Length: 254
Image (cartoon, rainbow, N blue to C red):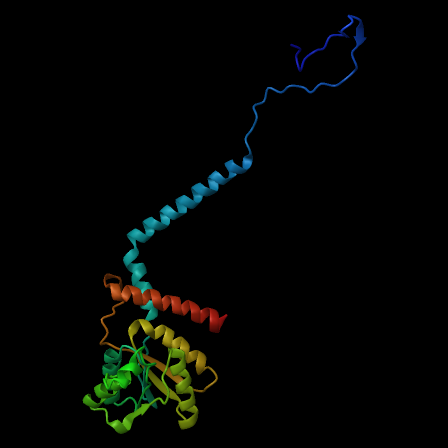
């Protein structure tokens, strides 16, 4: 069997035994260097190592300092201002007990002469209950009763005319009321983890109005920035609030 590479004889013989002159040709030179693999795979390995290293360091830092980090995450949601005399107390709907109690306290301390409350969108099935003659109090009924029992006179309560489906909708009601009544200052009562988003909503809606908005997170809530992650209900609430803050940022600020 003939060799593929290497020096060739000067003559090759055909089947008849006659010699034929070998044509001139250039043969490739053999190299003793090993065949190198594709460099793309080797380049990816250092990158992957760095990603794993950074993830490991992040996990170690989070493990060692998770309490201060989580406390800051919870504390960021809580916006609280020093109370001053204002035109109106706005008691936001939702979590009616803790917010109703706080609104009554602010009124009795004399910071504002009126309290605004808005009805929530009725829950599914509420109309069916009414058809069956079953009376179930809605959120505005509960807040109204709390205010009455906490020495807030009925004449001091202003009720929204339509259900509020969101914090932004309540801010729009206050904007209309401000223009109608000439109000220039508000105390907004809400739950601690909801305060940041409520403040964003009111600032966005009332941006063109010459008004002052002061946030007052209720002290009747069990939410505490220093240990909120220890209770499942507040874990869900904090996650939801950050999701909604991201939505607000995308929709109204970008």
